[in-house]
Image (cartoon, rainbow, N blue to C red; front, side, top):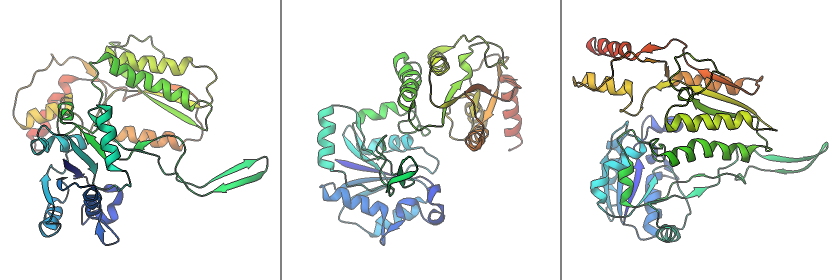
Length: 360
């Protein structure tokens, strides 16, 4: 069975090292992380490895040209800007119709790979991942009245799980990966009613129910302008909603659940976002699709362009979240998040055409 190691990201969270080398090549006790990962799998009998590289691909390739020649290690350049799902899709031809192991090139573990594989086979799922408890950021204390009962150093959180990597995958996974911009585990097909409601309504409901009564200060629900339906923008926060599509209806029900829930112990904000655009957006969306088509001088299907849209750049949304988290005065409420100045689809396409003509 082949082992796939995702090793193409920029490694921005370790930038003091990754300006010169890719993150999987950062050394732990003089041995690169990716080599330690390979040796870990080799202990369980794995000898065939596919490294999906990208950022500083040549450094990884040159290293394995000289080292670990007793193993079958192939380096595939999957592109610097390709997302995790896209990297998996690009190694499809090397996997064929076979089961494979997969992990990230920056994470180590003591997981028992034999037990992991056995669990996967017995579960009969397309994908099995290893879940781990996230480490706590701070030490904790237990207070009774005005006295400290005990102090505990940082340890793993007792609640919640995160993705620890170390996957087992069936070849059927490839049909769920759309293109280079697909993020592993990041997209729900909104044409599927049950999946859409399970993710956007039931997911929110479960989180609200779970955290109510726990030590939570703020719950942010990401809503959508589609909750209003076809009402002309800009809408008022408490305008009558006529949700549009599965996604709009699921988001509306999630918002309504928050608003109508009684005895909530935390503050909540519902942010109904308008059309967001920015780097790595799905190329089927209007702005990246128009840009790609104009660059390649290709015609593309479009409406008459009279529809009004309110576009938001993704960095502006991030700035909003930061301001909210820094705010010391919060009350439960709902806000529409947009420029308040919708423009026509035709105007956006014309603007893209002009900028590309000017080489911008």
